[in-house]
Image (cartoon, rainbow, N blue to C red; front, side):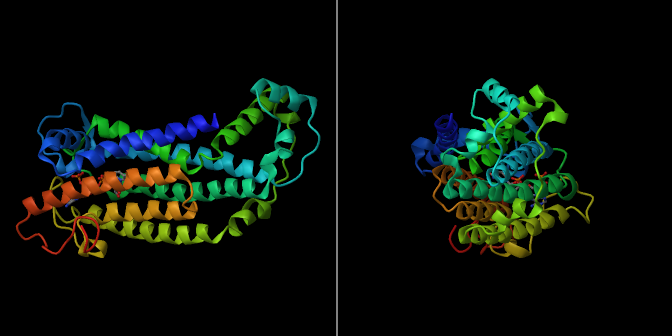
Length: 338
Ligand SMILES: NC(=O)c1ccc[n+]([C@@H]2O[C@H](COP(=O)([O-])OP(=O)(O)OC[C@H]3O[C@@H](n4cnc5c(N)ncnc54)[C@H](OP(=O)(O)O)[C@@H]3O)[C@@H](O)[C@H]2O)c1
């Protein structure tokens, strides 16, 4: 199961990234492929087609973050609880636990404590997943808030249904990728617990001592790369919040609910899509926090970069076409580079 999940996630990120990379090759022979991909990827201001066929409103972006918040919270809670339960010693398994485990088709919490998984290195890996999911949670919570309260989506802004489904997939697979190395055992633990709960009933479940310090101390004592990654993540997070506030305020003093303007301030001084740049910084922070040794997270990062660079290039072309007075020194996404 472990290999299955990881392999599936990796295959999905490669399948998402490859077409974007191929379409980005500046060759006349790939022109029609590029146009086809662009049709699926376009949204909002760069989707100018009057046809609404196979499109949904761009404000449906908030669905991504509803899914992301529910799913990330669930993964975070069970992974955190699992990490906590790995720490203290446990008593012999009861008959109920054995039955429950048997029904769930896996080892009991007892055997899990005495398996190879009790090594310090393994525990560290599980706590690292908790840390990454905590960062992801702060990102998706803010994004949910912004899609509801900060952005003022124009009533005519649309996105292709393919882009919509890709977004839903992204926010299911991305949190899972951050904890893919321990997800199978975490799911097994949750299944065991659930079966035990059903077999024993609430009143006969063993009570877990709740020690707040033991719940957070392994996070505080995390390795240096986690804190460096968190600092990079926070840097991107703060700038994305500011850039989104700027975009959200562009229609504040105007009656034009469909109007587009030249944004300025913060990273807009350097690039046309600073919110995409900030997103890349955020995922770079997650990559560094993971120790940059997990191929699944590298592939997730590769997808985010290629997807946003592709969208930023199109956005840049749109701004230059739309505004005669567009700042000529403003790059698409990477200051002084592209
Ligand atoms: N992780 C990923 O792979 C991924 C993929 C996609 C997006 N995202 C993130 O999601 C966030 C939003 O992305 P998005 O593509 O929806 O952003 P966007 O197209 O720039 O739109 C964001 C909001 O700002 C408005 N807006 C944009 N430019 C404007 C202008 N010049 N004048 C007036 N209003 C303007 C849009 O209006 P309209 O409603 O009229 O369009 C929309 O309400 C970004 O931070 C991005 O990084 C991440």
